[in-house]
Image (cartoon, rainbow, N blue to C red; front, side, top):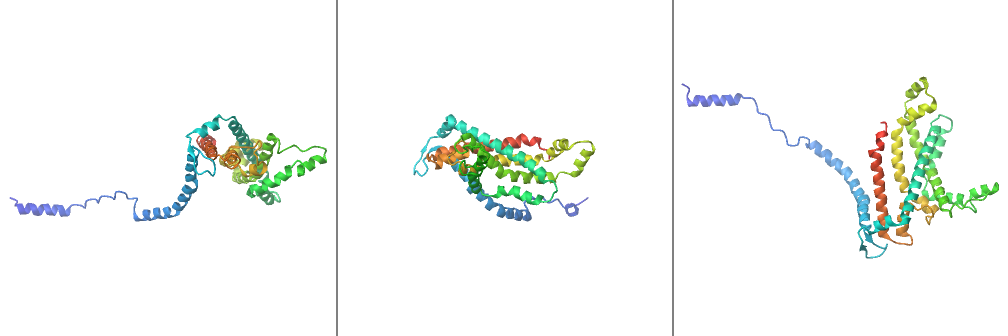
Length: 321
């Protein structure tokens, strides 16, 4: 008969010889000392940039939306809250639809002109000929020049009395058009200068994309009997579609925010009053309407956001990565 002491000893032996029980894992194994250190290092680098973005981008944006609900004269110490009154006035004014039309024409013309001409120039620069490096630098140079300086030079060239174009036309018995007094010609003039200034940017970006296209693919297409135009349309264009998509987004953002050339070449905005320039005229022109100008800026922001979302959601599907 086994005694109580024997049973106790047997139980202790069984417990001592049993395998070790698994230790419960940490609640968050990823949050170990090394990961914590990496996180704080990342935070140390990223936090100053995030604070600067919040202070100089998002805070002014929120303040602008608030100012758009006020009837405020620039410089006045007081303002009156009018809710959506500025927006109702903007969308009910006939002048606003004309401004939106000018903005659309300017944006479409400058984007189409700079991208199409930039691609054609890139195709020429992609050829390995003598002096191609100098030609690339010359094409890109106007993009890095000051918009104010470029505008002043072109104002002299377009001057109908003393300008270089007027002298050339007089030498062949023609008269120079009134570029600055005719609203349509003023818009055409600014579009020409804007395309000239930004042509080099599109050309250099397209040139980098063309140089990344595999030569083997083009040679295989040539062996199969595809001509140069067919190979460009069926092979080159799809392969550089990511670059086209990138240029389309950046060009739309830049064109809708074009200001310096319009300000220098047409100070009164005769035929060239886009959304951003109308916001400037309303706030710092003869009107001094800060609240109404903020409303126009908010409309421009919503338009930029909508166009960007549309491109990322729909147009990106046609991009071949």
